[in-house]
Length: 397
Ligand code: SF4
Image 1 (cartoon, helix red, strand yellow):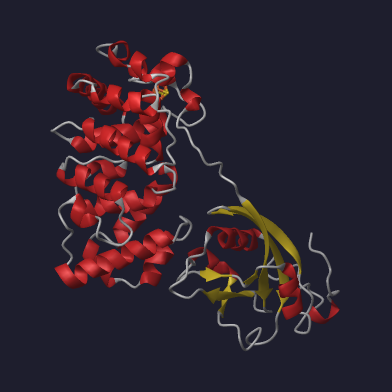
Image 2 (tube, rainbow, N blue to C red; image 1 turned 180 degrees about the vertical axis):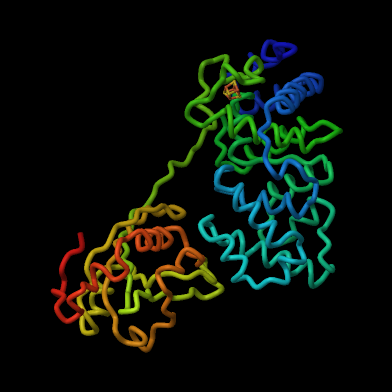
């Protein structure tokens, strides 16, 4: 049980204050109040934490793998990827020696491929310059590609017990609720304040457990739109809960305005039931991944294929969000009997049966999945009667 109502000690003065008054009140919080809050979190964590594979290790490489995979991805999705990854790349050196394409292949389906490219770049650098030794502090980790303040804090606190905080969306939500922080979390000054609150909660022993307790609370109890306050270990010290204003926090000043885009992609198939894929240049956002040919506008695609082969026909529509864009990808399909669709298109043919092993960005993975589940290897673009008899432009069903 929660030992003491911290709320009664320090929260009433926090609610409804101006930012300056709030800061003064926060400074007055006694360290014993914070210690009690942190103990409640630790006690709850030791009883209720989920048994996850990366919680059985202090190996910084393994924790690094889990932290990179968990960014923007659910735990249940990550577990099989994590286990497969460590079977193939059990050590940093084994990953550094492997080509990026092999790492991308194992990552296929997890999305946000920039994470794996940066990870591979960082381990290759460590292997080359430091014989594979990982820097032993959060400060050293932050100099590596793809490691920010959060990831460095998570690895260093869990692997080495460094007293350094973490702050991600989950922790921001919990802390703004507990402390009724009404300042916008879009402001760097507010985030700095939250970093320092997170730091002040850390115990001297096992600070990684406190960090994980916050992450766990955010993932399993303090949900964004339906926080489970009745089973929250810090409910009595949560100012937002006491005021019945849990959903008011965190406060944001910017509305997330998304822009709508309509794009087109094309599945080009040959009579051997292979599809044409193009590898993206290494430097771009999708560097090293394979994609179906795509265009910013359907019109451009239709123009390019007007004179070469049958007119593309609709296949499916894929919707996805990408940074501030909401993209509707109209996917078409067409036949190609040439060796390459056009001289200026760089790619190669892949059998449909092998698409599951290829690293795609997520919308293109959906196209590959749709192709894989379609019945009949050559149907419907290649009916038994033969190519010549297919009606141009016939709609697919
Ligand atoms: S009491 Fe509710 S709002 Fe407050 S931290 Fe717990 S779950 Fe979140």
